[in-house]
Structure formats: C-alpha cells, structure tokens
Image: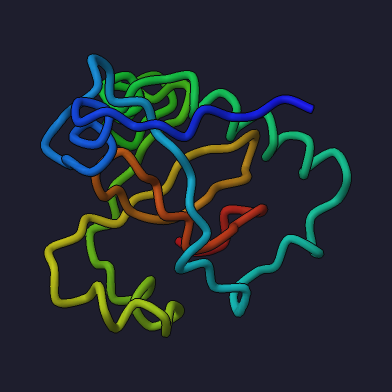
Length: 143
C-alpha cells in the first residue's frame, strides 16, 4: 500500500487558495452546476450525438479561451469556425429557462453558444476558466 504525502508547504497552500494566481494559458473546464434539463436533457441525445459532445468537451479543455473567442465572428458561414462562439444579444431567454441562475443574474454575465458538432450547440457563460453549461440544443432550436 502506498501512502500519500499529505505535507503541504506554504508555497503550495498559497497556490491552492490564491485565486489571483493565473495559469500561463487560460484552459477551460466545464461545469454543470447551473445545467437546466427543462429545455433539453442528455437522454434526448443519441449515441453519436453524445460521442460528439464528449469530443467537444475534450477539444474545449485542450483549447484556450482566446482560441475559443477567436472562433466567433459575424453570422456568415465563412467567418465562423471550430467552436463558432456566438454571444446572445438578449439573455432573457436563457434566464427564463434557467431558474437556478437567480444567484448569478445580479452579476454581469455574457451568455453565448458554442457549436459541438453540425447543428448541435451548448449555451452557457464563462466565469474565470469555467464554462458553465446551461442548456443543450442539439437541433439549434433556441434561436
């Protein structure tokens, strides 16, 4: 049996608790903390679509936020690529569908969608490095 060394020096404590320390690259992680299954649930996605979602999450985690932001553009086929980040002009539809957001609504948040594959999109917002996935939208029906 191996024992894990639980000794934490002061430098490690600071790095663990100090939120002002930024990584060299801003790699995203995905949270379902505010996920709302009232619009669409994972159970509605087929096996191929779920595999696409898994690939999307892997691709997202291996990208930087700067690259993700650069994937957006004007609403034309030629200007968007990859994640095709599109900000929502009016976030009321997201707030209405996401009852768990009462805590967050007081803060300024920019809601956006990301392409997972083909027509499929996920909607959410960014705080720090985290992408909070709010809604699934496999047929791009929200807008």
